[in-house]
Image 1 (tube, rainbow, N blue to C red):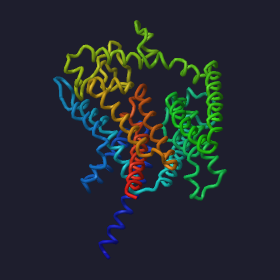
Image 2: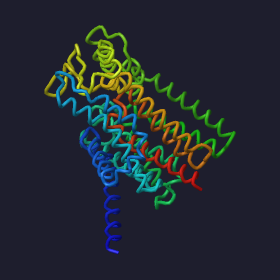
Image 3: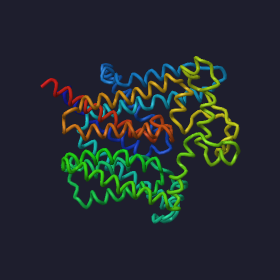
Image 4: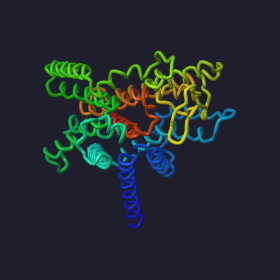
Length: 417
């Protein structure tokens, strides 16, 4: 009896550790790499160390594990701090996905969704507190100030909005009224507005559009298709009208392509206004100047890219950068073309297996669309904010690990029945 009580106590402690670990990532992960990289790593190492057989359930991570092998080549003149940083970045999605798996083993799906909504709302309120402390008021009309003064935030409010709108049926078991859910929805939408982040606006669409399609079709069947396309048409008109404006958000949206992709970078002014494109240009130039082995396998962890124009940072100016805004360029330089193939293969593998596990099961469609939206979101963010290697995407990878594991377990149960 004593052993059973000890196991029960240990299980409760582990459950509480997962809850507080998730809360720490949500509330304190913004611009705090120690939290978003360290917490998932500690949690995943603990549970794997406790039972090494858990690795058999994480074989889908093999493509990402191979990236670590590709990058483990210390070149001449590379600084150890850059090498360690690359190990942290490339290990981050492995640890976050594993944390999602261990959350699934100990937390029901509806409880997990409730935590995402609750913690996302808490983060939005924490963001409002930062805005108030910075400007002595919460009521800011100029989102340019909140973006550059407080920051562009994290994707937690996006997930909270998505779950409240599209996953409300999973939240009915909690003692929360309709007005309280509406308040949570408004709080998170306001936070996303204050973020003034094109990445999170598009991420919200990547989650809402597929899930709303599933909701329309599931509820209204054939008529749902027409209703969905009416919704899409209204959405497109709204975006076009917003782009025709002269607000800060409209200007940022208009300049997105120039900032993200290589363009006319022939002088200092063009570089400053299109810094992401300039980083991409120099990263691709570095890749093309490598030999055949470096093009296939990369330069290895620790490699930096030389900038003809120095990057002004607090207390320093960088002429060599170890990481870039473009995640695909980051993978290309460090692990070569083979690394790009592995990253894309990992995403394709998740989508294929997720579709296989959910095929023909209406109850699994929400999880499938949630998985697809997560994968699409962190691949999209690879173009602008280093993708799922960045700390901001940690919660998306945790969600991916959880939903993928849930789909696989449901599939195994159906096959065994």
